[in-house]
Image (cartoon, rainbow, N blue to C red):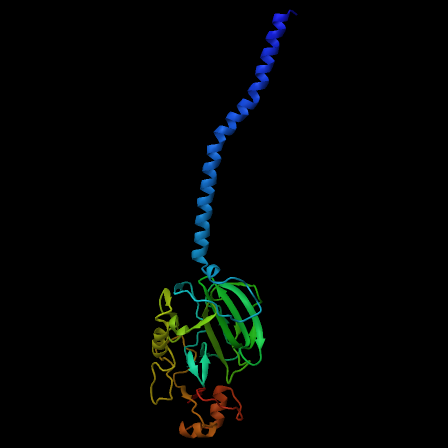
Length: 311
């Protein structure tokens, strides 16, 4: 092989080797804009996904942690916040409100009391996750706290039995417990609270138990108008609405077909100093009849504001 031919072979070999990284570099150069575009697409898609999740679950922005130690801990309220009330379920089919939100017996009543009987099914108001399942002898009794996707937390107190566990995912309408008379309670009822950032809001602003419905698709909470709205809600949907007979009688909303009580049943709100005997005399009935109808004993200690049924 002559020198000229050897030189030609060496040159061709060198060129073939040198073209490999050049081709690789060209490929990378062509791929770079594609990668950049894909990253941009991924970022946009991720941003949209995060926005969608935040719209569905605004509670993620309201609460800094998930903690099973406390029933409620107040943090800073936003100046305004829109609460989605769609896809709800009434916690109980009972239409009888026995105690309003607000001042009661010298202290603040942070929820509303709804008449239920021991064993009645209590249901989750919205989709969410169970944060607390506990018993508190001097307060809520057997109670459940649920954090909802709409930003609210709801509390269900004085139940006779829990039907869920902490960290359970629940859907609106899922059974979470049974009605009862546990804890600091003077009769079987559901104590129902709605809280935003741990601060108690009047449930009557959102729930209309007499009509078994929510007041609207959304409730817009505003710090500067909340207190006045709460007072108005008590007048519209609390114990003072739709009264008949005397001031102590509470109407059962006889137009409500789903009510579980006979329309012949009437209600008496206990005043300070009243006894079963005095009430029976006033309502032209007997102590035994009152006790049987309310499933209470003759020696029960009556509390002002307590609601008793009579016929």
